[in-house]
Figure 1 (tube, chains in turn brown, yellow):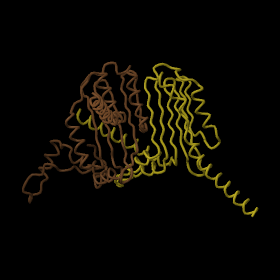
Figure 2 (cartoon, chains in turn brown, purple):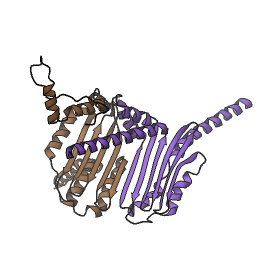
Figure 3 (tube, helix red, strand yellow):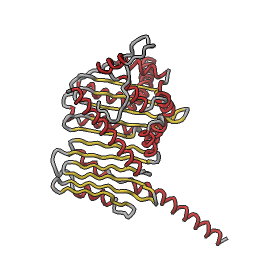
Figure 4 (cartoon, rainbow over the protein chains, first blue to last red):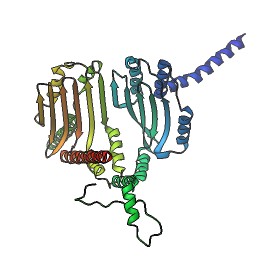
Length: 214
Length: 196
C-alpha cells in the first residue's frame, strides 16, 4: 500500500516536472496565443498550414536571407464576425509586450475592425544580435499572424546581393522594353529592316524626338 | 592637495554638465505624447508608430545596403543616417471636438523652449484646422522636427528626433512630386492615345 502511494506520488512529481516547463514555454509563445485567440473567438481555421510548416522547417536548416525562424498563420476568405468590438484581441496582442516585444506600428480602425500590429524584439545570438518581428493583421475577411527571426547582417547582405546591379533605372528600362509595341511600330520596323538582315525585327524601339508628339 | 581636489571636482562637474547637456538635447527633441493615449477610446482610427534605438539602426542598416545607383535611395540614406527616432501618433474621429484644447496645449508647452522654432503655421478657422511645423535648432543643424496637425476630426503628431537634413527632404519631396506628375502625364497620354 505504501509503495503504491509512493509510486503515484512519484508519477505526479514526474508529470508536474514535465508539464511545468511546457506551460512556461507556452506562456512565452505570443504567436500561439494570438493564433489561438483568433481560432477560438472567430471559429476560423488556418490555411496553408503545411506550406507554412515546411517554410518554417526549411529556414531552420537553411537560413535563406538571414531568416532563422518562421512561424505563420494565414486565415483567408473567412468571416471575422464582430471584429470591431473585439477588445480582447487588443489585450492579447498587447500582452506580448510583457515578453519583451517593442511596439513599432499599431493601427486600428473602429468601423471595419481592421487592426495591424508590428512588434519587434532584439535577441542575442552566438554571432551577435538577431531581430524578431511579430506581424499581426486582422481584416474583415482575412487575418495573418507572422513571427520571424532574422539575422540583420545576413538579411542586409541578402538584400544587397539581390538588389545589386538592378537599380531603379534598370527596372524602368526593362519595363519600357517589356511594353507591347503597337501595330504601327511593327510595320515601321518591318519596312526599315536592313537588306542584309535575314529576319524581320518586330521590336524596334522608337527614338525620342523632342518636337514630335506620339 | 586641496587645490588638486578642487580642480578635479571642477573637471568632474564640468563633465557632468556636458553629459547632461548632450543627453538633454536628445530628450528635448523627443516629445512626451503619452497624454494622447486616452484618445484611442474615442477615435475611429488610431495609428501609432514608434521607431527608435536598435530598430531604427536596423532599418537604416538595411537602407544603407541597398544599391547606390538610385538617386532616391541615395537621398533617403543621407536623410535617415543621423536619425535617432521617429514617433507618430494619429487619431481620426467620427465627430468633431473629441479632443480638448488642453491635449494640444500639452504638446505646444513642450515646444515653448527657445530652441524650438515654429517655421510653419497654417490656420483655417472655417474648417477649424490648425497645422504647425517646429524645428529644434542645434547650432547650425536641426536636432528634431515636429509636425502638429490639429483639425476638427483629426489630431496627428509627427516627431522626428536627430539630425534632420531639411534641405534634402525638400529636394527629395520635389523629386518625388515631379516624378509623380510625370507618371500622371504619361498616364493621361496613354489614355488619350487609347481613345484615339
